[in-house]
Image (tube, rainbow, N blue to C red; front, top):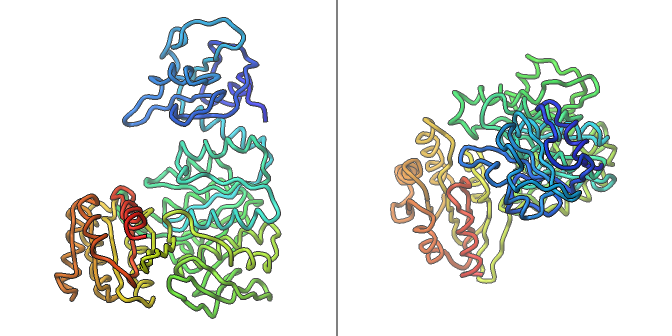
Length: 474
């Protein structure tokens, strides 16, 4: 799909875009919002954020080889790099709102690409479901997926713009921490298949209750048509309640473990950090599925990905064969076995109370000389933070954790105190304000035969502990 200046301006019509400098046939090799990662020949879209103004970098983008820039209307009377009439001069496109312009461009490319779009939301498991689904669909189709955490009102459009390469299927995740955000993303992506993994307590600080989170997640149901498919978790009461309240016009496919579902796992065997095995039944066909990802929650994610793949005609036996070879995404349950005899469960990408307690339960079910937990503060919990951190502290004691390192602010301190109050010896619980202060003590305090869980919100940077353990104890 050729991205010429004329085509881009037309695609950005909803944002009142117009070409104010340069040739209309100038072509762009891609789209970027960041001069640090932008490649020569790309179109730079100047996004205004809370702490930066992309328009201030328009001239720098051209110096790095941008073929054009999109800037707010009226910001520049002449191009910020000066007047240049040569045919190869960069173009300048003005728009009323550059974010709306980026979103409009993505939606236009999405419509013209002919690709099927699968959009995944949920409080947990979005990335794992996305990655496994993409691997399964790649058995038959050309597939793209959004990179990393590009799942918000800016990241999702950047991912959808890659549909200009004309894959057959795109698998994207939709993130949110406020009501209305999923609605915006659905409007941009216009997904053919929507996937709702679960409802949990992540981002509870932005909502009055978990039910309010469920209502916001339910925006995934909006703008559906009779041809739209929904893959939904049959085990989640809040999802079931929203589906009863808002009948879905298209096809619903359920997945689950505890309840009857279209894609159901039974005879589940939890193998601790080595994953799970289960019988997975679809209609009247059953296969043995070996899931090498840690914990029953990941089995649920795999069931969701299986339901997606079945919708696209991938045979169940082929799905089972591929699932047995999947690997976790970076810092999302990676098992790192060091030459020093220590094993790390690297789940440092993010954390919420439910996932933290599940991880501790998995630790308790796995044989080890000592079970060690390095737990960072869970952010975005608002007024619920202290209570939820105390719950995790009590879970650490209940699951017989031998050594607990806790890192973060006052809420993390409450977790440490709750663990002691619930029965952990005080000398087995160590609390630090920052990861920099904690890292040396953690590295010195663990050894051969230890099983070490590392988990926390990204802002706490518990991944640095993993890197130090690899470097100094590997």
